Amino acid sequence: MACSDLVLAIVPAVNARPRWFDPLGEPGPDAVTSRALPPVGEGLRALAAQRGWQSHLAAGDLHAAWEQVVGPQLAGQTAPLRLQGGVLVLAASSSLWAAEVRQLTRMITERINERLGEGTVRQVTVSVRRPKSR
Image (cartoon, rainbow, N blue to C red; front, top):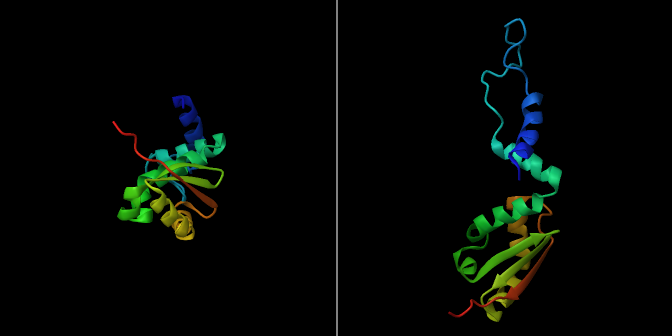
C-alpha cells in the first residue's frame, strides 16, 4: 500500500468534518475544538473497503484474537489459516482435534461473527496440519 493511497483515503474524512473556525474567526455551533485528524484506522478501513480488502483485515483481527474466541485449550491445537468469501479454513493438530472443531463449528461461527460482524464467517472447514519434524 502506498502512502498516497492512505492519504487519499483519509482526506475525504477530514474534509467532511466541520471546520474548527469560520472565515470570520467565529466558531460555529458545530465547530470542532481541535485540529485532530480522524484515527488512522478510519482511513485504513475506508481504503480496505475501496480496494476490497475487508476479508484480509478480518482475518488479521481473527488471528490476533483466536485464543479469546475459542479459548486457550482449543487455540493451542488449532489456528485460522485463511478467511475468504465467508469461508474460514482452520488447521488442527490432529484428526481428533479436527473432529472436535467440526462439533463446535456453530459456536465458533457465532463467536467470530459477534466479534467481527454478522456474516463474516458463513462456513468453517478444518484440515489436519501436523508440524514438520526437524
